[in-house]
Structure formats: structure tokens, C-alpha cells
Length: 458
Image (cartoon, rainbow, N blue to C red; front, top):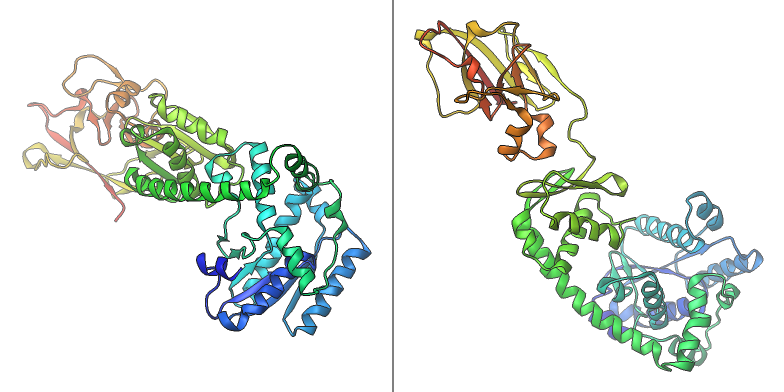
């Protein structure tokens, strides 16, 4: 165990180590193993016990056993009782999932109360083999086949290189008293079925060393996964065009050059960055997004769980929260008295009228435009697009649909509802930032010039 701890830097000098102690052989071996090296490694030990409330008096006796032992060893002791079955029913999950969530929630809360540190759990080589089989039966990739890690955030697994047989031998040699959880001897949970039925069958009929074989497989997959993750992170940073609170945008052309295996990892990383977890995200979700991104379509999207949306643009691939950046239309009357704040775009629009002979034209700023004021019929209004919008762009003779202009200008679908449209109540004067109307241009006969300035909120 000491070798595993040192190889994977599981414990640092001065650490608080909270041991999840059930009283069974595995956790008792973990406790006494850590006690043996406590002075050498200079760390503190705390005990945490969870009564799952499913074995009645036996569970109560386990709790008393662990509490007495903690007092005997003069170790700080923390315990809780949970309603595993009730929580599972309420949240529509398996009893195993419910127990694990409640157990680790308690461990983390306790760790916080003692000032931080690490949570030591007694997963061993056999548990690793069971985990791999369960994941293979569900369907998994390299990351799944690497199994449990020696260290996951604050959780450490010092026994992961030690078999259950070695643990039982250690318990027997050192005459350590343990408790027996009889539910582990009954195939009522999936993991129990694998431990009690599947693995013995494989040992007898295919591979007597299946535990070691799967443990080695997990090590090999761990190395491969580590390399792929490092490459993916480096590539992901290179592909990222922008990262905001609710969206991540990737360069489409660069993404298309990567292998599908890397594309899947990049998509998974983007979702994780956006939501801080991958809960509920399956390999099918990831593949669906990659296929969408690979098809070459523009303006297409798919909705996933947890309000996650993936969509394509001309040059970009977008993963975001929510389907639209703005869900309501806007329409403002423009005053000549003061600038008007447009909250939907976080910008101001300012209008003034200047005699033609006094106007100074700035051709460099595409957000300052000049129009024949006397052609305005019904005041000035700023709104977003409407179905059927069309106008005559400057320099053209015929009408052009606004939708076609957006396509020609390669405006992403998710941005089109946000682009401001200046009108006089009847006709489009200016598609802000893009094109002005031929009908309102300044001519030799123009007397008064309408100057419109659109700018970001300072």
C-alpha cells in the first residue's frame, strides 16, 4: 500500500485523511494499513461511518462497532444515517446509486468540517475488475475501461493494487476483528451479481486469473487515456474561438481535421467546461453532436438534456445553454432628444438632423450612417427582424429579402434575431452593421441629413 501511495502521490505531509469505515474487511485493512504508516507520512486520521438503514439491527451493530473502535484508537469519529431506499425511489435511481451519492455527500461535508483533506476509500483490485465488467456490459470506451482512478479530486484509493485475497490474509495474520455485511453475500445488486456469479463463472470456464487480467487492462487503458486527454486538451484550446458563461464556440475548419476519436473528446470537454459535469451525457449524445458538426450543414442544431444545445454556423461550431440568446422581440421609438439604450443588445442609438452643407461624413465607422431625412415618413424605430422583411440595398435596383442578406453575409442563425433594424415604420432604412437602403441615400437634392450613430454601452 505504501508503494501505491508514493507512486500516485495520494497522501501529503500534514494531510487530514478521512477514512470511510464500514467495519468490513476491506475498510478495516485500509484503517490499520494507514495506522502503520501514519507517523512515517505525518498525517491525521479521521473516521466516518454511514448507516444505510437497510439491515436493521445488524447495521446498528456495525455503527456501534466502528464507534467503539474509534474511541479505542482515539480517532475522531463522525457518523450519519441515511434513507437509501427512500432517496432512490424519490429521485428515480437505483439503490446502489442512491447509497453512493448520499455516502459521498456525507464524506465531503465531513471533510469540509474538519478543514479539508482527503477521503480514503477501500476499493481494491477485485472492485476494479467488477467495475470494468459492469462498464463493459453497459458499453464504454477507453476512459471507462481505465476503471477507478487512484485519485479522483479529494478521493484516494490506496488499496487499488491489492487483491481481496491479500486483504483477507492481512486481516487473518494481524487478527483484526471485522464486521460482515451479509447483503454482500446475496446477488441482490448488480455488483453483487458480478462478484458472486459472473466472475466465478469466468474463473472456472475461461480465465482463472481474470482479476489480475482486468487490473492490467485498467492500467493499460489508463496510460492510453492519459495521453489522449493531454492531446485533447491541447487541441481543444487551439480550436476554441471563444468561451463565455453560456456558450463555447469552436473553429469549424480546424475541428473537421481531427480524428473522430479526438472530436468526441473535444465535444465532451466543451460540455464539461460549460456545465461543470457530464451527468446524463451518454456516448450517443456525443456521437450525435460530432455527426451534426461533420455534416457540413449551416444553421442546424440539436437539443440535448439539461438545456444543452449544439448548433452549426458558417465558420463556427457552437455548444451552449439554451436555444436562443434573446427570446423576446423588441421595438424602440427613436428620439432626437437623447440617445436611446437598447437593452437587448446592450447598445445605444443616437439620432440627429444636420443641414447637408454642415455635415461631416465619417466613412471609416460602419456604425455611423447618413440618410436623406426628408424621405422619412413615420418617425424612426429600431427593432429586430420580422418574417418577410425585405428592402432595396444600396446600389441595387430590386428588393432583397432580409433572410437572403443574412445568408449572403454568413450571419449565424443564432445571431439573426439580435441584429437591429432601423425603419421609418414602413420600410427598412438600415440593417445595422450590414447594409443601408437605396431608398434613403443622400442625393444632390438632399437638404437635411439624418445622422445615426450606434455604439456599445460605455
